[in-house]
Amino acid sequence: IVVIAGPCAIEKKAIIIEIAKSIKSAGAKGLRGGAFKPRTSPYAFQGLGVGALKYLKEAKRETGLFTVTEVMNISQISQVAVSADVIQIGARNVQNYDLLKAVGRLKNPILLKRGMSTTLKELLLSAEYVMSGGNHKVILCERGIRTFEDSTRFTLDLNAVPMLKKLSHLPVFVDPSHGIGIREHVGAMAKASIACGADGILIEVHPKPEEALSDGPQSLLPGQFFELMTELKQIAKAVGRDI
Ligand code: PEP
Ligand code: MN
Image (cartoon, rainbow, N blue to C red; front, top):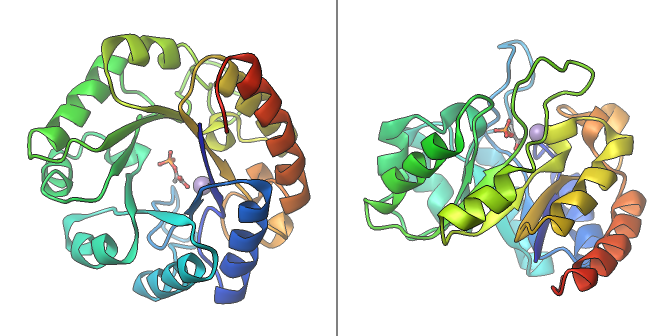
């Protein structure tokens, strides 16, 4: 089971390096941080852009973690593909078919997030768009869907894990941070994700969540992430897997 962690957005060089070191010491294998952020409001922080890619590379050099970052449009692909290992397609772009075709021509693995209202069949067809271009390295990621429930940010659909694993050979990841959107409950859903068969998880971590430029309320403190990793290792063992 692969654990990927990091801040929602890359904000400053010192912060991303600090986070990279702390998640690595907790046992994470991948570092995720956004340079280009799809924000609901045009007035919210949009990410540092290309400048952040340099910081991500430096964090990789310092820690050896593989890196994950999002592309929002075709024009960002060439720079991102040489700066990060894995390319994320965010929930809002899961049915951006031109973008899917374009990343289908890359060698980088693609972390494809389920949209907030895409069915599993639609998600799998989006994965087909990537793979039909020749890039078979696709990771599916459940990150919460929209339901009538409004006490949590989204409703993490853990049904997706066994269903997708039955329907497809692709690895299935879960992002409990966006799925529930509430720091104190991210751990519970991370544990549930491992218990129900996820091949990996994505966790947002920030050393000063109250100052984070995006998704602070759902970001774990490094110490909380460390403790969670200890618990996740036990859950993994209980289901015959390893972190
Ligand atoms: C994110 O990963 O920070 C993000 C914006 O995710 P999603 O596309 O799932 O909303
Ligand atoms: Mn986020």
